[in-house]
Image (tube, rainbow, N blue to C red):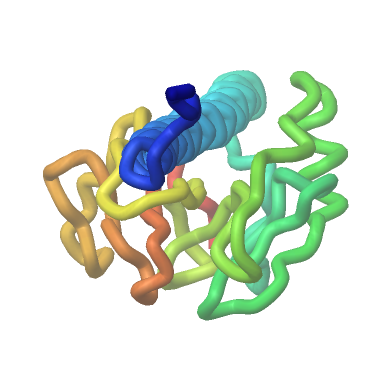
Length: 187
């Protein structure tokens, strides 16, 4: 008698299940690596913006963003900026020319989703007085912002755990707000 060679259906199912499990693990690992890489790029852009702005303040004795009436300015103009409470944020010509005397700010960051992305500068709560704050968004809930956090308890959502708002608007994004040190903005 000849014996037939081949795989049984049970053996095939076991192989398919094992391949499926390995594929699922690979996808999750890739997503985590991708998210970390995107967040690192955003934190680097924010750190560069902070350094340029602080250098401008040290040289000029004032902030590069004009005062009254200017609530937000987009730094990452190539990819744009969007803050859910304010919509799309535009480039500010005065900021661009002022900061250009020091260096070139980052123009793009990874974006994900249709709101809450980019690096912005703002006078929080009042456009007539400092201090200046930088705001950026990371992918994922409760991510570490990577820069010194705000110390102003009047900004809602402040956390001492490394982020400002760990899940802004329930969108799976972490909001980071960093104070830019410098003089109060003249009224």
